[in-house]
Amino acid sequence: MEKDNDSKDRERIIIENILTRTSDRLFDASKGVEDDKVGTILRAAMSAPTGVNRQPWHFYVVTDKSILLELSEALPYCKMAKDAGVAIVVCGDRRKFLEGVDDTLWVQDLSAASENILLAAHALGLGSVWTALYPHPDRMEKVKGMLGMEEEFVPFNVIPLGYVRTPHKPIDKWNPEAVTYIK
Ligand SMILES: Cc1cc2nc3c(=O)[nH]c(=O)nc-3n(C[C@H](O)[C@H](O)[C@H](O)COP(=O)(O)O)c2cc1C
Image 1 (cartoon, rainbow, N blue to C red):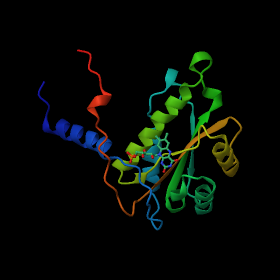
Image 2: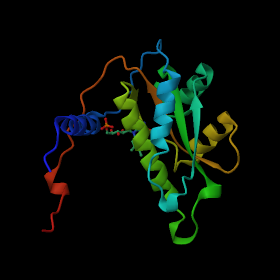
Image 3: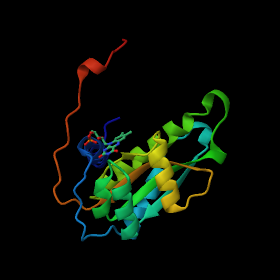
Image 4: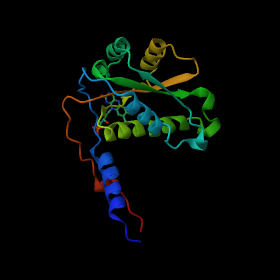
């Protein structure tokens, strides 16, 4: 079936959004992020696929400037958090983890949610960067204490988001050698 121009435009825009996402670390500290954008980003996060549809997650949304500063000072690779408008701390919820051979699937679930956060932010004109907590016990414990998390939550990453001061060019990562076609 021939595609109409609207669906071609939609395809182009969505693929372009994926191909042009970058990790942004230079935020404009004077600009906050609108609540409706944060809401859209959280919806995108929760739209991710999860094993057995467990949705084993919890999201802390930090806009408190003193906590953003604390995150940037406490975490070695999250210095940019101090200038972010908001940081989303993606956590696992142990009560929803699978058991047995699937007991680490939550990592994949939270990774899918995290990528959705990055892509939604980019589509909304915001910069973002995934900064790792898991699997570093020291970083996880610091953030857990800082945010006063319930025992059952497992801090996974911190994603600072904001309007960027200097957008940088996306890296072209296309590598045909990383693909094997079985025809
Ligand atoms: C699991 C994971 C952990 C990462 N941890 C950090 C981090 O702690 N700090 C940081 O600045 N960037 C971090 N990044 C971002 C990567 O450095 C970035 O994705 C990579 O350099 C490719 O650049 P791009 O995202 O602009 O394509 C992380 C990314 C992933 C997926």
